[in-house]
Image (spheres, rainbow, N blue to C red):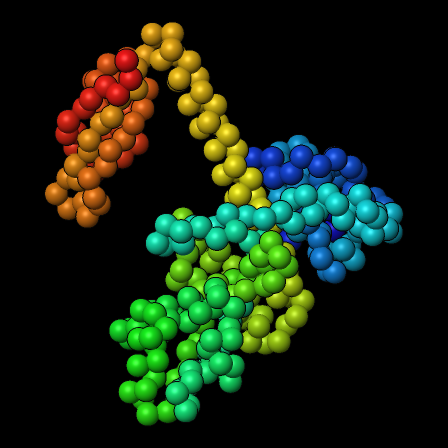
Length: 313
């Protein structure tokens, strides 16, 4: 089977990218030497390589054993390692449901059994004293119990809740992802803590990973972990590009304000009946209040316009 077919019919074919990587385009050849494809290296592990096809920026996974010996040797080079690390090795900014952000590189999925108990006045988490856990887990553990429907909000209420169980161990199954922090430590973060937008990226491969995990299929688990790392990197590159565009648009808008072409407006938006969202105060650049209101409504459907005021001279 030629590489072009493998790319499209691999065990996973990833969504089209808007330039997932800025690495070098090279010609990849299959093990028979008959078929080639021009593509950029995105990521790889022991079994699979993810490449971005030069012609249409489509991402796909190809088994390494289907590649030529030259390509296999290339994957051992510093150039290949550095190229892949540039895409998937950087720190990423993830948003939690409460609006807080956490910085870390996505490594893998994870399922963990958490056993809590209280003995002689000390709370234990999988036989480790709660107070000896890393600070991040001291915050996560109460949230895990709270998420299960118990009235726990912090370490103190966690201890009180366990005390009411008279020493009986309490077990929780936690599903989520593993993040590598900037200091190199790895932590498991439950799915329920992430924002809905981030979950759209994190959860699609979970069922396949879990099936592989339950069958002790190490290769399939690695495959899903690689897919997760690649899509996470692509997601954050696109988000960073959007942020750069937003900053550029703001700079242009401020220049237009200084030139007297436009003004900065603040539009108050109230939720329409049936919209549970809070009131919003939206600022933007426009020639007049009517244009400012139209722009605000276009970005926030389900709202009605309240007071509008110009905030620039």
